[in-house]
Image (cartoon, rainbow, N blue to C red; front, top):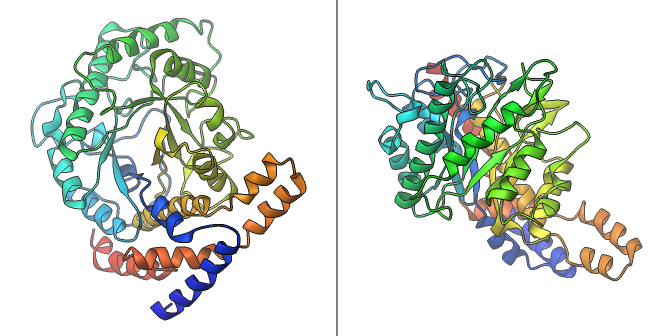
Length: 419
């Protein structure tokens, strides 16, 4: 679609939204400023670079599409290219397993900012902030499926130190890049079958987390930390130490963020229904936006009803300043750069669409005019949002429509096919 067609469509859309009481330019500006954190692990199938190699801890990546990033340089190049296809403020989300040890005999309990120096330089070049995650999986120091709640003292000590180091690294990220570094703590700890003592491991988990977050010298405004819950994982189907009730309770009690992952609940539960409830009692939350298919399968984010409801909740209730948005999925069955672009573009579409929603919908509800509320909700679905999105992409210097796909196909031919 050429520029003239996009501008014509935009003028029509702008008038349609104006009649509904919406300032389109203000909505675009608002949506554009909302940070979304792009997950590094989509680009290399969660393998990382600290030498472990095999995925464990209930994580599995399916598919063998060619072109996986094999080195930090390849991953950074792929991410930089993907970013050219995505409008809006972007951050980059790292796991500790993406450390670059450069031949040093150093393990996760002793990592410093130096193992991530190239990532900081990359973020500066790209004008991005960094978010971070301790990596409590895929490591020989895991006690089976246990880390911070292991009954082995040396194992727990290793992982406690890892958590401390990650908070220190996150603080350095924040200082060097001039914006907060959100850190997410997810531990896969649990049992495959029914256990006899559900309390013991939670006592140990609490003691470990208490020690990590008692560390002095960490500015919580620079390094907001979230605790992520999970219903179950592969190999820990019957008992998960860091369940919803545990993670939420720990976050509330200790003034931390609670991390809501779209795939970490029962199949009939959705996180959009939990956001306003959790933020009654928490200052902030962290979202892991994903797409579960029957269970926590971390499919590429699509523009479905739940994604739109999540972003509606954040925008309608003015929760954006209290929420850190990050993507969490990994698909090796399709082009990995395309997976990044699809997920990030869809997330930004949902944010923009939420910012464009007519206030008349809520006003009808406040007036107890539920007929108008339903009617206006339905009319919203066919408003000319696509024309606004195309204009926003053009204005941002990003390819419109499906033109981005041709660019990915060319990148695949020129770069990915040679790996």
